[in-house]
Length: 557
Ligand code: ARG
Image (cartoon, rainbow, N blue to C red; front, top):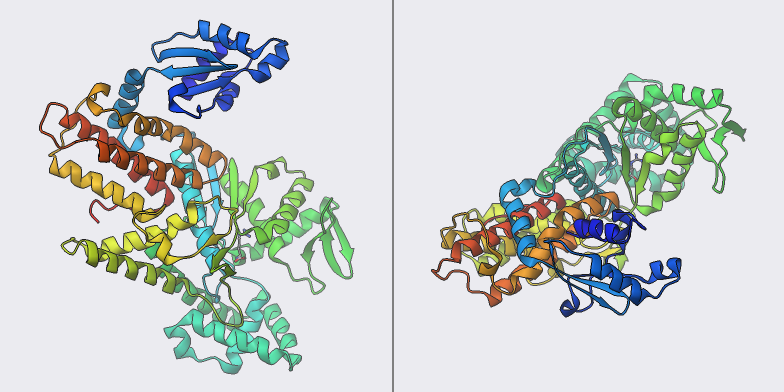
């Protein structure tokens, strides 16, 4: 709607601005009595050295279309009332026709790579990794909805000096059976012990370095241990991905690039980008510290592996965009990485984007891995699911498939709580708040969807073509939101900001609940099936918005 009106305005303004420029200027009037949208003429007035009001009057006089019901020039604004009937019928017909395809873009046959989740082997899956997983998954869904082919990559932290430490620790104190039973917990235990003992026993660190070197040189025993740690950890991560309903196309982590490192270092050399600094090799950068490429002993680093990964992915996927969904504490790392790639002469470095995010807090404090004290994600999810189960027992004892619904609601609450704020904000983890059925929560949106589903069932819903006048006076705000869904899908992907979808789903749920509170739907008159068709449109869009966020929409709760 905004798009079409912007096109009309552009014509009325003799193309002084393009439709898409105008679309960005269109405002929503503070009060609904003023109109459905308003176009401010102040910038143009300056440019043309005329009064805003005279421009507004002139433009208002030129605007006429079947989509527009009334136009007024008020205090330098062109206030527009759209023709609610034609907008309503267009939007709702489109939703009924396209169902969950509503708002989807035609395939553009271009790839988007999303690097997300990426936990570290033998370390607990942190709250930061949860955020990356949830945000990355939503972005991937949004990219698909916008017509892209998505490559979902889990860039596992499965290489690095910590594996030298782990191997030494395992040889000293490892308990095979214990590790097999509970891999991450046990591996973490010996890793922490390694650090404690190394504080007094210097030689341990030397052993670890030697042991990592052996691993890098392909020593069989070390490799076998490394592979075992990796497989066991992955099995544990898989449990979490399973609960969250997350999948990946590739688990090519850091180790995958081992045999591709020499080529990268050589390329840097050939391009004369490497400088020696105290035996190590670095790339000097503008406005930031140099990027370390190899250490004095020749070992490569996190950044080197990311460099190799970027070059490999470019060849493999030739993505239009690559998103690295990683906490904002790594922002220097990505700035350096992108600048190095730019210096290598690759203009596609500007297609790489660090999608950063803030921390997860509990009672205002960071939830982190300190001295082996960790908040285990699996416990957090279990707790959310348990709470959902208790709520269900209280509210709806007769519910079928209680276990499944409790899982969908508990997990949905955790995901929604993460995505409803802009990703750069720190978020607070309060189970009680995120589970509240009446708050700004996932369960609230899910509940609204389930409520509509049962309404449709009770009313023996049969789809009808909808007439605006049948719906009642509270329908318009709902329709305006429904109309905004496609543009929200687009913007939220362009700005890598899934919170726009979360906020949208809350607004739509709220608007529909208000409609329902003021409108009798299940009255046996000729309008009933039209109202139910309208409600079904809301359910379709709510369900799809939740799906984009990675949340299920059960039809009963
Ligand atoms: N494993 C890293 C960590 O836990 C995150 C990796 C992110 N992806 C990347 N391509 N660097 O901090």
